[in-house]
Amino acid sequence: DTAVSQTPKYLVTQMGNDKSIKCEQNLGHDTMYWYKQDSKKFLKIMFSYNNKELIINETVPNRFSPKSPDKAHLNLHINSLELGDSAVYFCASGQTETQYFGPGTRLLVL
Amino acid sequence: DQQVKQNSPSLSVQEGRISILNCDYTNSMFDYFLWYKKYPAEGPTFLISISSIKDKNEDGRFTVFLNKSAKHLSLHIVPSQPGDSAVYFCAANDGSARQLTFGSGTQLTVLP
Figure 1 (cartoon, rainbow over the protein chains, first blue to last red):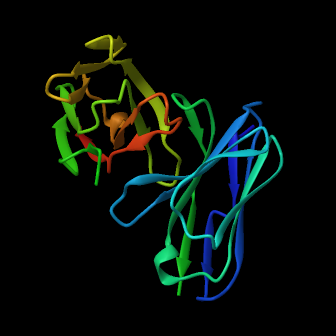
Figure 2: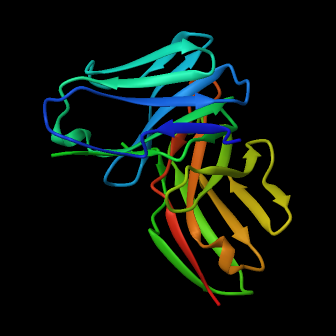
């Protein structure tokens, strides 16, 4: 019955690899988001999708690409992983003012 | 360029006393402010919000105060309970940007 779920919870991988993080929401929201929590603990918006359209695309490297197969899913694909990509990635859904977050995916790039 | 700042990374309070968490912002276009609460290994959960047309919003033990002239908001929790121990994030929105800008969080520890 989890409202916003993410898989995997933990991801350890080598530099240069390509990986994906999946996100699903069962709240019926039109908009989903991806955030990165960096080493300084700030939560920074990366992307949001509204009805399959990318509506916000912050200045993130183009190695990061969001993919939304349907309204309930927003996956994050990362190419050529770098050490600096190590962080916690949170998926969220809902309206701008009230967002529901997933539990996070802790990515460690070695 | 951090537009939302939480200058206290941690705060310890005795159970039953008041907890006051502070947040400052620099963008005068922000018109909506929120507090999120985060437990370890979980995502942030919405706690309380306030519009810039108000200076106070109360929900049970939680009250948020907004001082627009000082670009400052605070979250008061009274009485504090051990279950309130968590990281609290301040966030702001300027309406047009359709995104939230978060602070770095304050770890609140309520001691029994």
